[in-house]
Length: 421
Ligand SMILES: Cc1cc2nc3c(=O)[nH]c(=O)nc-3n(C[C@H](O)[C@H](O)[C@H](O)COP(=O)(O)OP(=O)(O)OC[C@H]3O[C@@H](n4cnc5c(N)ncnc54)[C@H](O)[C@@H]3O)c2cc1C
Image (tube, rainbow, N blue to C red; front, side, top):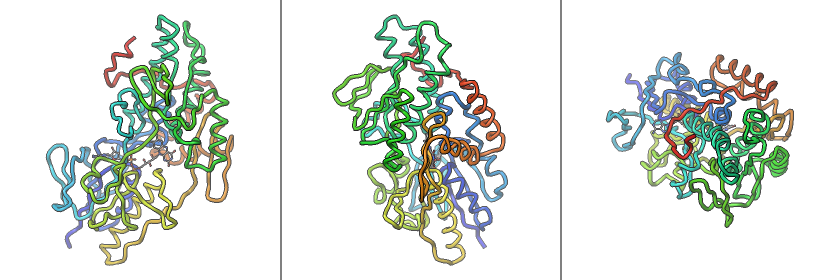
């Protein structure tokens, strides 16, 4: 009997989980990703702040799937989808035909119609983004050390982080600690501890996905660490060395973006299913309306749970969707009914700084030291690869006792002459 061809676009949490779940199915799977590695995004901010090296949180997709014999991995960018021809186009001009397609291409930052802000305010999604943020963060202290005037120095020592979700909170909490502790004795002309970190959130509270009392706890913790938090404040312009918050113009040479997401640009192939943020609305079985052979999983999908609540864009959601899409393909092949997707949360965690974290589980919440230890444990547990777990453990242990960051290197990936020293 002819084996069905399954193409998976994206080797993140959703795509990898789908490929693994199809391991014993009578299908030939091709997984295509534009990068050759799987990135553990929850620890990207640790790379962005020099705590970990890129290789600590990423592994080659080919290696991850080495024992899944029916999966072929291609490192290539998918540039388009032709649902009528049941084919995806690759950047090298080749096409891949499929019987089933699983779209798991994730999301990118959204600048709410101001894409020109991106060069001034990079976001955090990939390892390249993390290294870029690390460069800018470390370089700002180097530029401040060289500054000729107090105003120039202050502008280099002012960092604005836009977006008070988990990523913004994590970045702000760790950056302020590095400035106050790790860099304390390294400079002669500036005091890194005087650096300002301003976290701007448009809504009324931080980490809005968590219950209100944990948002309040995050606010208290960040304020205690020395972060200036502005709630209900909108960034209205970002330029070279300046940020406008409402009517106030702030001189800040370093700005990071953690404020919004939009689905992969591949979603545009399905104009009837795409929402305003380029996410694809799916049916309860995760397939696209009118295209029963196409499933969408993870951050690229807009999914609602049976209780009417939107499924959060988190790693466990993407993994559960990847498994459900794979099982629905297997159900088709067996002539069985597809099942609807139901998201089961295992709890949410966000870290704010040393000994400071918040945790929400279905029946209870907690914060502080126990949540921080749980956060450490969970992230080590879910990290892919034994070598990475060991390396991260060693580096966290070293950082814990010495306050030092392991990877304080400035590597110029993109040319940014405004930061030349
Ligand atoms: C900084 C940060 C911190 C986070 N922290 C947490 C956390 O603490 N806990 C949690 O649960 N979740 C967290 N998340 C969210 C979680 O990482 C995502 O929900 C999850 O990665 C989504 O998985 P995915 O498979 O949909 O997409 P991704 O993991 O983003 O994978 C998408 C893949 O598609 C590939 N791709 C994209 N476009 C193309 C194309 N055109 N052609 C080929 N390949 C393509 C990409 O290279 C990528 O490998 C965080 C996310 C970020 C960015």
